[in-house]
Amino acid sequence: MATPAGSKPGSSEPENLSGRLPRPSESTGANTTPSVGVKLKTIVDTELQGIDEKAALEDEDLWLHDPDHPRNWTFRRKWTAVLVLSLYGFMAPLPSSMMAPALPQVGEKYGITDQTLLALSLSIFLVSFGLGPLILSPLSEMYGRTWIYHIANLFSVAFNLGCAFSPNTAGLLVLRFLTGFSSSAPVALSGGSISDMFSERDRASAMSILTLAPLLGPTIGPIMGGYITQGLGVKWTFILNAIFCAVTAVIAIPLLRETYPPVIRWRRAIKAGDFDAAQRLNPSVLAAKGGTKTQVIWANLSRPMILLTRSYVCFILSLYQAFNYGIYYLMFATFAKFFRDTYGFGPGIGGLMYLGLGGGFLGATFACAWFADRLYIKLATKNGGKGTPEMRMPVLMVASVICPIGLLWYGWSAQAKLHWIMPVIGTTIYGAGVMSAYLPIQLYLVDAFTYAASVTGASSVFRSMLGFAFPLFGQQMTNKLGYGGASTLLAGIAIVIGIPFPIYIYFKGAEIRARSPYTR
Image (cartoon, rainbow, N blue to C red; front, side, top):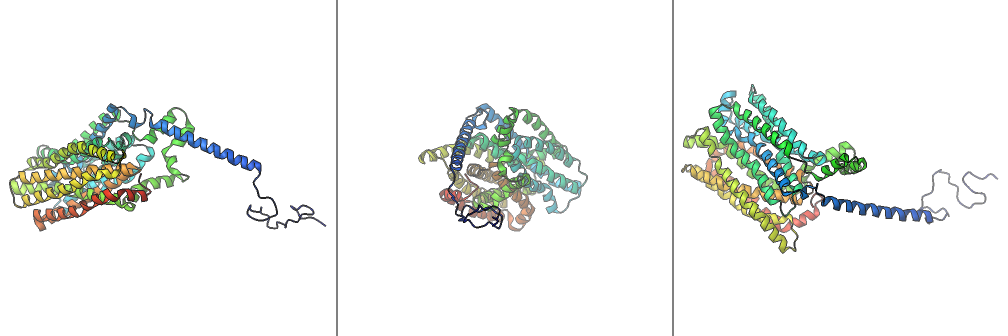
């Protein structure tokens, strides 16, 4: 009798008519116990995997102590980078407010009679200033930060020159939009750069300087813009912005080096000719985890919005920061008209009134830089030497009380038409509150979230959107409610948003972070 193929004569095993191999779990009468060879291979593979993991850990430890790691740079090298980044940060938002005192002249030049459209020519900059970080922040975590700083700044030179020679309103709006996008790089990336170079215990001083720059820039801008417009005309506000950006490039390009550690390691491996290590250390490959290049890029580009929409701590802190930023730009849009109509100040003297905000920013910067690190170290010492992001919140609690006081002082002194110094004092108090809130929020986000540039970019998006929106209705609101009523409304909202949430985060933030896949 013929024996079917695959069966031994006299075998009692059933015929395998399907043509497939039996699974190990299926009873075939054969011995399913792994052979000695299979067991030995498993043991060897496990031991090799353990050796590889141990070597990787040792390699990481060596890198953390490597002189090329930004946290191990010399004091001079770190602070050179901080000062260059501060210069970029100062220059970036300067165009956003430099034309504020010249808005009446812009209206005359382009025949703009609608107040909302005129305000749009100022605030459209902030739309793209907010959108830019959605793209630039994640790109910096794939390819490095420095080249984005430099290239974006060079584009700002071109776009500012375009604004200067724009023939019509449409051209001005488009070029202002593009200028905002290119100018967003320092604000989007600087928080990540500080995280690259400084540990949690010593980053408050560096962050305070870097935080001051983009707030001081818009404050100095109207002063410069007022006198430039008065003496040279509107066109020169844009030309001088282009010149300032070009000078900044000459200083920054030779001095600023890459700060993102994964990119530094990757480039060093390429330079050494170790292409296997370069492939392994490539930040894009590390992020891929088996995905395609398109999937990696999309995952990185979508990360800021994911953080903003799925982490309510990120959302609430960004909302409060954005609310203050919106009021800040609302003041820019209304100062020129208020001081002209009430006190008869021209563009030059009217621009000096912005110094109240600048004085508040400057004073709070030095106070916060001194206080924030010392408080953090003190609280960490009480916690057994371990610091947490929530230890940044006490400073924010104080700031959330200062901001409404400044708003009420400014609004009601303006309503009563007291001596011009009184509203300016109110803006100084408010500026101190804004800066005192801005710093701990930035530090918390950088300390708490894994991707520092992405989370600060997400915060910047929210901030810029409200900075864009508030000037569009600011004049109408003050016309309807008066300066006192409008400031009271804004102060009330600031109290509701600003006071409860820092207290809640201080006590519950660690639990929230433990449940989130995006935090440290």
